[in-house]
Length: 349
Length: 280
Image (cartoon, rainbow over the protein chains, first blue to last red):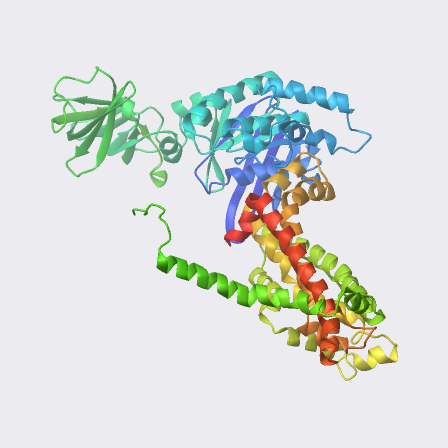
């Protein structure tokens, strides 16, 4: 009852879009494909949906060879970034489309279709809007219609390609939780593509991080946070500071101070230490790297200090509002040190 | 930039407006009125005789026959070509686009002459065609070929920008929802382009019925046999039958006016759906 993607290779001309990608989605799982543009995440989604054919590799679903089926035969619900609603049809007819195009012997009766449409409209909280045309709806409403339309065919798999990409920040966040709710209610295995790490970490059971057509890491959001596999993953998942250091076992030594290493470096010696702004300590005295506080920015409940090293590199430290140590003001000289760091292979840095 | 408030036209503005109107009257209105005035100059009976006369009837029938074959074929070609160009990336796409535009830039006389060179008595395939008793030039097939060539770009040109603008997302969605290729075409693609298609067909038809140059070359001007309306007008005019010539010309003028009317309605009613092609 699961989706297995094995050793997929796909290139466009000389440009390799997917280089040996394998992953597995468990039944009912909510999976995010996360990566920058050009990482192959949309191509992977299109291979699973049957809109692209890979050069080699296999895709199986519930033991069935998916590559032997056309996109039409796979019974997959697909949601697109720009909604792709049929503009000349009402919302109700959009949602019913997948049912009305079925061959006569499999087609539900008109009453059944109407019933199904009404239920889906209720599910996506658009009751009473069945008679509208897509152009009369807001972006968020359109995407909900698109989801209802995809769910109407009772898909075996739901695929969403940057579903919130065209929406503004507030609507995007609302729809995010709502999508999770719909997934939990319907229980359909769902894979969605995004380049927004916050969205992926917030929503998914597991996140697949892609880079240049290859999988960097697959894991739960907690896994990715606690044990990033590479500097790329660490960098992509949030703001990152880095400093040269010397690694010795699980300790990173800097000039005059040291910090524990959260992962296990593969070798000792000179390395790059990576750490998050919220794992960064700032004080006017004590141990640490001498920096100058260049700017202090307040956003929500967080105060961010932008610090410059003597070499001019930028390092950031986050504090809860009101928790900034005394004396840390714009222009002040301060000492900066990480609470703990990650060290990745030198080749990765 | 500051925009000046609307103001009453002053003397210079009035002069320019009047000049433009006079120009329009001279260049467009006067000829149109002349056509109708000449046609009815000897009374309605003479006009009627000129229209119902067998050669005129044959020319009218021929014009409609040629258009009835050429326009649907070009509509099908136009939709297919636009779909190919708007939906797929392939080598030689630019060349195909230029080829579709070729009839716009070629003199209609040349467009007719190529068929004579290919299928005429001394043309490439002339001997073979004669041996098998197949007539292409100086017959209906030649007229249809010449008309199709001249009107080839109209539908495709109207649809390409629109379909490029709309993208293929809706069609992709239809396929994932289980629609077959034809279902997708008839339920999704066609409804999205229908007004632009109708617009293209209208322009194509107007040109097909009014075409003179290319058709003149391949027709052979056989009265009652291979004359279309525009050719019949010329024949009558050369015979100094002015009333007859203008009587048939009124039919062409009416056709143009109807086309203009429908075109205006389409542009007004479906401005947004045609906008894509207007922009390019």
